[in-house]
Length: 172
Image 1 (cartoon, one colour):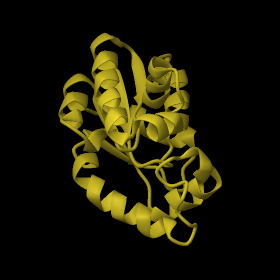
Image 2: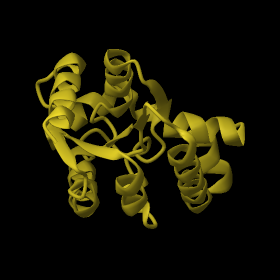
Image 3: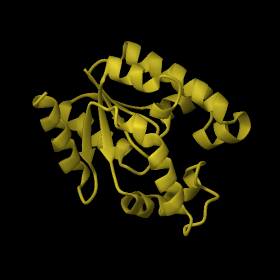
C-alpha cells in the first residue's frame, strides 16, 4: 500500500510522512526530494533556472514513476501536486490519499520562519502571506477535497496526526 500525503505547504506532510513511515515500517518518499535528485538541482534552482512549467512536468513524471514502482511507502507530495494535470486521479488510483488540513493561521505561523527555502513565497511580505495562503487554499481546495481521507493538523503533533491516519486507514 502507498499512502500519499497531500496538503498546502506547511501542513506537515514531510514531517508526518517520516513519523507515519516509522510507525508502519514503510519507506518514506518525498516527491520534491525525488525531483531534486532526478534533476541534480534543488527545487528553488529548478524554479529559477527552468521555470514552474518545467517543474510541474517533472513532478508529474516523477509522481507516476513512484506510484508505479513503490510499495509499502508513505509519499509526501508537494503542495501544488494535486492541482496540476490529472494528478489527483493518478494519486487516488494508485494510493490511499490523505489531505493534511490546516488553517491559514497555522500554515502562516509555520511558513514565516521557512520563507527563504520556499520559492513560491520567498518574496511575499509576512503581512501579505496570510492572504496569499488563503487564496491558494481556496483555489486548491477542489483538488485537496478529492482525497480519500482528511485529517486536521491544527494543534496536533506529528505523532497524533499519524495515529489518526492509521486509525482512518484501519476503519476503511
